[in-house]
Image (tube, rainbow, N blue to C red; front, side, top):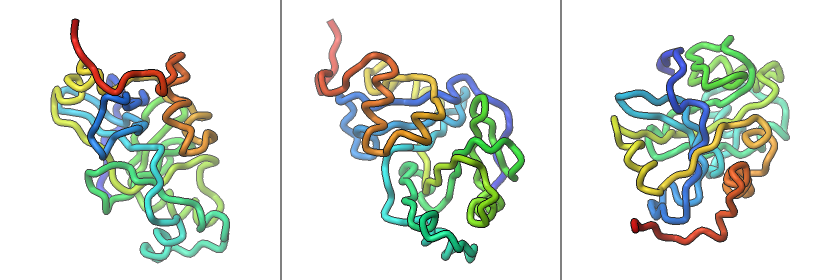
Length: 191
């Protein structure tokens, strides 16, 4: 997997929470962990959508041995529509893995095989999200979406990422702001 830069960026470590007004089927009701953001654009990983694959299937395709049936049965997430063939591992295990990018305190994203091998052998980070694909925005595109009422933002936290069930993350993330998404209108406008 390709090397990634190691410098933190302005909105890195924030969660983007899709508002009900966001109709794009790739992102409706999604929560995206922003991993990188600068003048050239942004990259993130959707952290609340299961893919059709299990971690065991990913291990098998990569020829990584895993004896832990429960670990092999874990769902892999659909991280976004960009590079759906590429794996991204969001974890709390430090930057000791190849191609690690620090997202925030105690939070990293890695695209390298070594972290998957460590997870399969039971020696990986305590908490990890494995996703196929990512979300990407060109320079200024995300900023336009943020001012266009498509997203709410909140700092990422380990409890939300690693403990809250996938189906509850959208509402739980908005709850960090005191927002109940069920009560927001599904449209936006200007007065």
